[in-house]
View 1: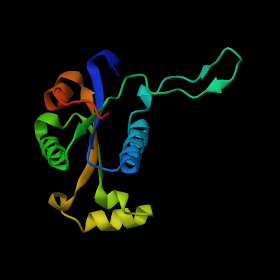
View 2: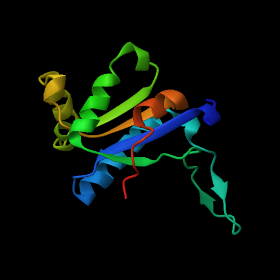
View 3: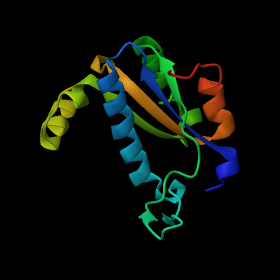
View 4: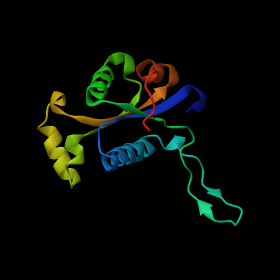
Length: 140
């Protein structure tokens, strides 16, 4: 992966409670780490020789959006022009499931238009990611 020309962002609904925002970012981050293991750097050692696991080798800004804006971006990401981007979405449906099998079953019965997205992560070519998210502010 050419980290110089790649970008990864998360967009999270700014109106969510802090705990749900943190949970959304954590879940999307774990999924990205699984799907893109080459962006995780090597393990490191501190001066005392203690090992610390590698972290992501590129910044992942968390941007603020609204449920409506996240839905608009998610719909654009289904277009063929964006098919080369890595996309992780996290919905209310997913957040409400306690067991993965429940998530599978509920998703199989749910139309995409019914999903209420809490957040979305997008990784890929910097120009394409910027085209979708370049003017969005950081979530603070």
